[in-house]
Amino acid sequence: MKNIRFLLLLMTMNYAVAQNHHIPLALDSTNTEVFNREVSFDEGVVYLDVKPNAGFLWFKGIYFKNGRIELDIKGRDVKVRSFVGVAFHAQDQNTYESVYFRPFNFNSPQMKTHAVQYISIPGNDWYELRQKYPDKYEAEVVPPPGAEDWFHVSIVVDYPNIKVYVNDAEKPCLEVNQISTTQEGKLGLWLGNNSNGWFKNIRIYQAH
Image (cartoon, rainbow, N blue to C red):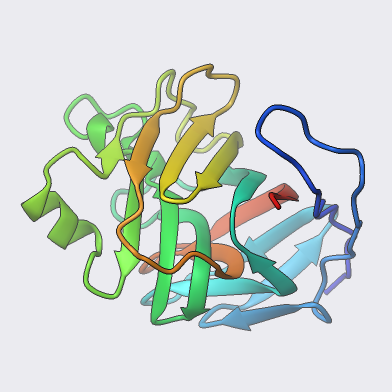
């Protein structure tokens, strides 16, 4: 396993202009904490392997409230076996919010409206939200990336509003109000049941 330097930018910002102050960190096994996955750091890419149930890679020392989370993600074109995203405002692996993607649905004529998802755990996983609020907390990604291509994600959190942008889209593919009343917590990478994934170019812009 190699320790690879990632640039996590913790920046003071407002939503009009980001300030230039930042703190670069080396993201490796010393300042991350993995749960229910094996992790490797290789040539600028974090890889998390396949296991049942959700898995996390927490960023130690980052307590996220409002701001912007940016990163590149790659999943797989395997039906119901590629759920890749970010967990935030987490207390632990049982209490958190997440925005994640289903790459296998990006270009599916029948399932493309289930491509990006917001959840709030416990109590508001995808199934409960889909039953209670159809099409409110999940959406299509337009234009859709390839199912096994890298795609760039920008998640803007301004409690209680969340906006999710993919690649160079000017409009968010998903905009929701948060369900959880928790406004700050741990931050990390997230994988769903029986999923693996690749992550790189991670930047965190912290609002104050």
